[in-house]
Length: 532
Image (cartoon, rainbow, N blue to C red; front, top):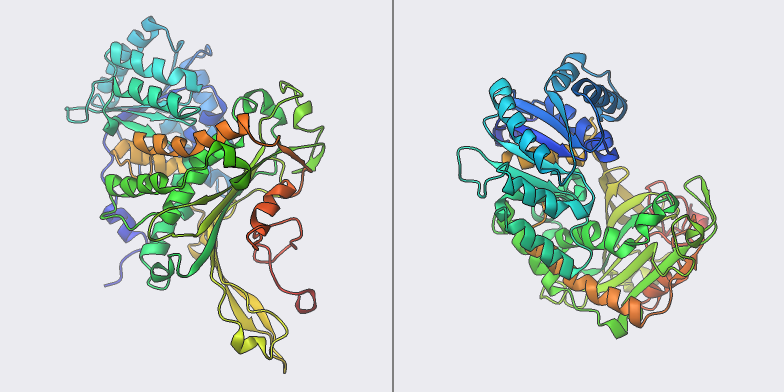
């Protein structure tokens, strides 16, 4: 029997219940750029219920029709499919016909009461049956007050075992350190059960990140090798070519470690390093991720310079934009110690990864926008080819590309044609859009759909966030009290020299460093010049 394309996906997708989706912060950029376009794509894919309503909530004064106009603009400008095909006007009109706007402050009790009455009207009009998904695209300071007021005014009922359900999606950052994360968890759990809290990290919605588990656990060529016996080390890079000048006032209160490492990069680390889960359900997968964070060897504050690097970009150009340097940006104290670049060497003290370093780095104003995981396998013995071959035998790399293009590359050794025994790295390449002849869905599409159906697999659990902060807090303390100041680096490169030194001290190099060439396979190559 030949099954149609998409058979397994359609067969395994749970039915989507009726619901009203309330976006707090609906006048902001996230709603315009990601959330509203994602809802249109879900509607286009048949993954929104027929009985749904969209309600925007923010302080901005706006009518229903004005909000609908914003929805149209958001879809036509930013929807994934709109970039390659014409927008389906019937579907867009359906989305807009079910869209409404409710102005109000985040602490305005009267407006919350009015919202409750309005949602009950929409239950009758659109058949949403009392099911609510509240998306908090708000400043972090509003998370706890909004949830508290939702509970106090009866818009949320604790638990998921009623005739109707209410769930909350919370954007990052989830706290600024362990103490604030613990406090926020306590405040949320005072109103909601853990099953109702969906802490979102959009990296977990990316197809390549989800495919990481398939690559590891569904391929016998990888899983037996995924241990310290065969893996020399792992590199995780999340680089941005843009600088932080336009949002320096906010960024100076955060920094690269809080902004990217504690959430995005640690999620990539956990999925790369975790043990096989007992099942593909939310509890089993998140249990294994928590174990990874709890197994990370602590970095003592006084030893932070041995395992961590921080930097700040100086004047120059990156991503086509000039900058006078981070310290000269509006809203930044000239004596600021906030890092725009961070690199760490961490060890996971368990059986699988005994002694295997994980190198991670992230930064602003770097050479290119790039998110990838590199699993570098141990060097094969040199004795056979070392006697006759002028070129080295290269270590094999598995490169998992998360952004901007999603896919995987496996670098293996191959012989260069000719009479001499010369070896060159060869790329076995897999690109999502080319292989499946379609662009992968945006992360927010998958994550919003999962929240509607109640699947928490790709969301962060409370103890998971706390365990990650327990690793980060001592580093922040060390940088505050004991470490060297951030090292300045030139925009358009790969960060401060100290980042390269972190690896060269172990006789290793980054896949992308200050000396790499432009490679056809979108990664640095080790091929000698005479063989290029």
